[in-house]
Image (cartoon, rainbow, N blue to C red; front, top):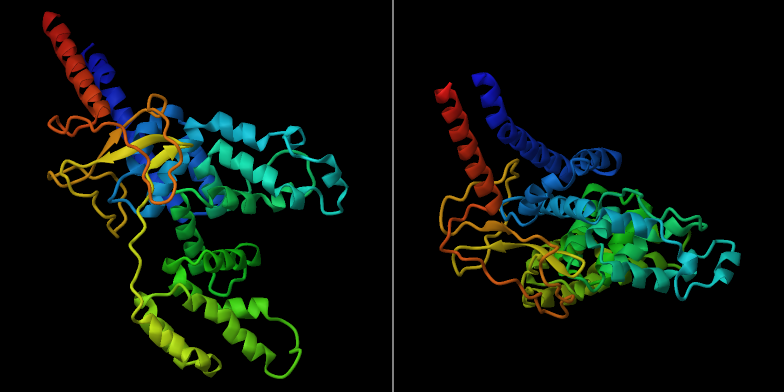
Length: 388
């Protein structure tokens, strides 16, 4: 009888602990993997349902995790919380959408090239930001399931367009840089060359180092065939590199000077490179708050007036226990009860809900409920044993 009571009391707590560690381990794995290996780790956690949302939500704003782990936490949270909307979007009948013209299907390449405006506006309206990021970052190939010729050839580009003016593009820039770091020769032309051009055309200053490092590979992919006239390839080599100098800053001066010095073809750019040393670096871009469409899901509370702690480099496999008043503590806010805020424009931040009472214990309500329940159950169990 005593053993039975102990199992009844302790099993829920043990199970929750195992589930939590399982989620954290899977997130660390998912941050490193792509394609089928990533999807296997993701589907295992998503199958656990809404019970794991508190863990994923805390990780989504945990400043001691890597940005990849925080992003995985956000992607999987949205995948569970908005599964119905994601499935509906993938099964959407585009022929019924306003602005769609069936004549586009007469094209030999299908309607895709003509659908950009229709699809991008709908994707932006749906606001499935982390599904779009996941599709690009992890190459899941989870696009449209409708029977329209070659529609998924354009799906990645449409996801990119939907994120163009959103705060979540912060992560898209990081994922593109990470992709180029893995592909030294830009062998994956489908993504690598596309990402290179996107970062260059968006003038992402944080991407300058990788754009310089991969420039030779990019030039070889773009400039092919014999010269139209003597010196044409050298002219293109110099001309295609110059746009990078337009958004480089003092952080990149040494790198650029060394790169130009070792390539005589770039000698005409030496003066422009020298000017970059005096160009101030822009302010670091802040990580966006975690939201589902335009509704905040979680925010990070700090017990002091200072800004949230900067993410640390070492990887972690478990959420840290707060040890001082300066450690940022995640606070859960159910996304279904928070007043929706419009998408921020310019440098505006979305309005946060009122700060909770910071004089209270920093332990989240979830853990407090578990602790109280466990103590009560133990007390009832011991009282029953003594009565017998």
